[in-house]
Length: 364
Length: 212
Image (cartoon, rainbow over all chains, first blue to last red; front, side, top):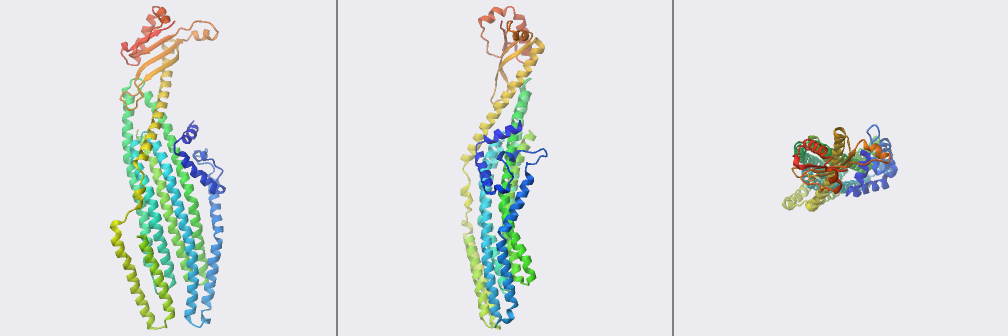
């Protein structure tokens, strides 16, 4: 019975087709790495309480990561060739007429590295921006459905409080990360790389400043969003629970003989609605996780390439290039962290909405 | 502000590249030291110049996201849809309530009067915002004798229909009921008193009719 209620109830929800559209898009693009799921499989459970096909999903993710690493192997080849050439030129330094010629060759090598790094970084930022845009649009499709179900359970206060907060927070976080954090990370990366260029002109402290500002902005944004959402949730949940408890008490106490029957009937029906809402929420969480995991794995593959190259180049004795590559890997990690932070805040925000309704029903 | 920082970073990068190139071109010795000092001072000025422009525009910096906040119409639509679903849930609850009362009354009539409840119509306060939500206003039930059920299945026997009504509304007496009313008066009075006591309603709110 609950499975049938979920299937029929979820499909008939207004606005659910917008959410389902993201699943169809995900299936179209990443279908070979996902288990053979239908959309309704997401909220089913096997006997052990897990979503069926979870092992296949993890296997698919690992295959995707390896596929991305293989795709970026040409970049690794270019970087290693560059390092070997730089190392060779350095060892031939003594054969050149003057030291400046050797330094000029170093500069040329560095410019080539800078070109490759900027290209990779642009790709990484595009991946990050695309992931954040997709997450924001998904949230803007999912949240109205969740709040409608919340209102259908009688949680009017919570729905009214959450709606402006969630919409503002989602848009603000995306705007902050796209327009402030990513550019700051980009500037920091450029300054770090240029810092390696000359041994006499150092600007790594300025790069550190930009990096620190972006990290602080991310941390502050996450803390504020979660704090405000949690406070709104507690306030709204208590208000709804008290209001509904009063109704239940009056119905059960003042209608003679059959009052308790009515209270039980209302509880039964609202229990099914709560089950429906929880299914929708968990489906939303799983879909959000699937939307974000593939871009994160792409970024991870780029980070791995740069870190591995930095490690491989070190034995050649070419420390400048190795340090620059490791720095590049660290800066790409910042992009990864920014995207993951936005995803985490959305994730926890939805979980708070789930918890608020359940808490209101428990208090009832 | 980001454009200002972008320009700043561009100037710094160009300055460092030019300084490095110049350093290569200059001969070894004191000139390189002077160059480094000069480039250092130039870097400081390069860093400070955009700061003062940031200070100037800071009070007028707008977060573009403020214009992206949805209007309250969307919230109104969400609450309206939620209310419709809520009403639909209440209706389902009322249907469940009706079936529970049916089962309860069926057991009571079978146990006390050996009657089988065939049909039950309830008029209930269905507005969840009302203080009397769920209160029974009237009940109309159709029942027949339990021991006549067997003979009914054999194709014979008369069905004795009993009409029970509770509430303000007065039941219209059909001609067929009037003809049997005298004979079934005692029985109907007993049932009426029983139901009035059971649902905690005044006797004048209860009327029972037994049909032939």
